[in-house]
Length: 455
Ligand code: FCB
Image (tube, rainbow, N blue to C red; front, side, top):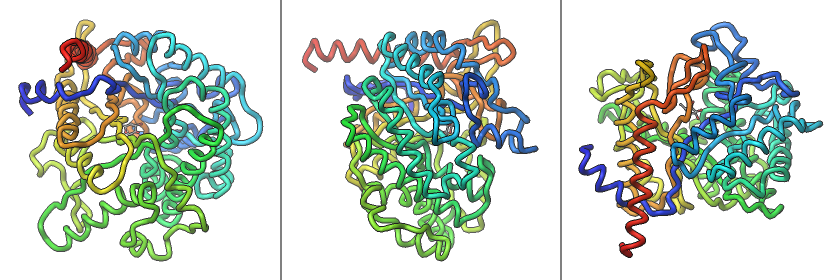
């Protein structure tokens, strides 16, 4: 995308459009056993030999639990209007049921108040993967009781923070929790069973719907929604096998979540494919899952190329790759948003995560991460293009504020627009952060100008 086109498109953002940065609890907080926090499935999973590429864990991470104030100063200084973060369930209710931990609740209360004092809207995610280990010991998300524990957790947090947060997302990326956590097994809790994964996905969706209903019944004023990882799926070739497989994989990644949430049913082709592994669904579950939402969060990183043989070598695409080995494909974000808008009746969508890992180097107090600047710029352009085509968008958030614990990749992959030197915990704004700050200033100025000229 050329710069002129980008600037032209950047003009399309309305003045209520929310600009933000995102993080998650386990990836930045550290303090894994401090102030009464219970263990999560990720604390446990990190101890499995070979599970994490660099053998690391979340014990220290970015020390955000101690450094939250200066981190929030960085957030405010960027000029964003929103900060998306998650609450660690085992920090506030260590066993997932039973006693609440007041020190954990106090931490998030200080964080939320600290954001408000700095003029930044708190966007809270309830579950960004760190399920209390004690619940896992009772079957975790495969156990239907966990659904009810989650609803209690949502209500408990609402009681404490609900009057001050702008937005509550129930889950982050149920596909990842179900598929990587329970079918492929390379993420916590490391289970490898297609049947378990399918049941987990259903329980995640059900707990989402019931939590939204319960929060609404309590008069929750925050906007309520869910965050999905979605991609356009494209066939590697025109062969009938590849094309058929692409439809199925689109079903497993996109329609398996979007259909029950917005149409009230699971896609029949995926149900047929799962056969005996299909989830057990009780009467009333699908009605609960379809509870209307205030927003849909979409996390987008790359497209998904499908080959029936099961293996697609990204190197043959000719597209540039990020340090994760993911193709950089901004037009996929436009395609995805337009398709969702056409196929479903949706509330406003937010891009709740978008960004790239690149090999960053600290060089005399600067990090010249030009590939990341380009990545973010082009993806913002892709959002603008979707809006131009009529898609209702509420906001865009960069993943991530800080370099952090990138799950099974440990600390080897850096997604931050702020560099973290893990030896000293020093933060350095990368060129991408400087670019984003500048871009936001220009956005603000042009929307002020639009108001004064009635544009
Ligand atoms: C998403 C996760 C987020 C981060 C990015 C790179 O799947 O939600 O925590 O790891 O990928």
